[in-house]
Length: 267
Image 1 (tube, rainbow, N blue to C red):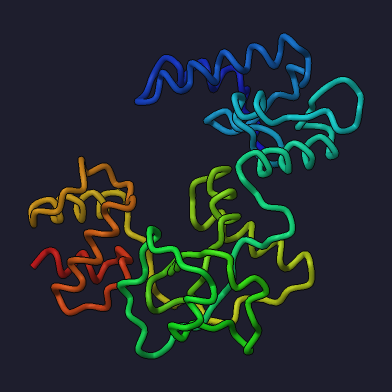
Image 2: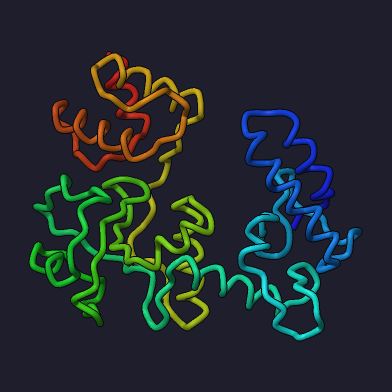
């Protein structure tokens, strides 16, 4: 949950760093939280960036989504578990979570799978994905064949594969990291009695350092890919460029920016 003063953290980041405008809004929101007395000042502790409470609300997110579920007159997402759970649920709901539906499925790709389908803009119904030979482990069926999904390969072609539904995007709006959203979705399944992932995660596969990610983007720019300024953030433009480079280089075009791709770019 963090032990830093949210007021101090947001005030500091509002004055220094690359995102001062963003943190000015967070600082003002923090002052408003304290003024209303929703969270006691000595309990408003959080991360270095100002996120607080068990589910790490930023101050502006608190203002939009926090609710007083226990009825004590305060939206206290630090000390009141009912407020924490209800506020987090309200956040997900307003971010588009569809009640009664899941976030995604682990799937098995056919041996002849065309990895050019690994693109978040390519969303098809589960029935259409099934027609391409994609199935669930153990022969389980898709409960809602008309639901649309995209393919996610968190560690490339060597690791598990998933079909992600719209609820996965709702989790991403809460925290825009695939690993976070995948972990939350999987945890929810396990809490309901679901089993572990079937496919193994690749041993020895490491994520690129920020310096390596910047280098990869710079090398892609040199090869004519319009991916924007190299910043180390591997967004959709970088992944599309990586996939195109993999195709031209005779690699498996899974769009996964790993050390193998970087080494090939260095040649």
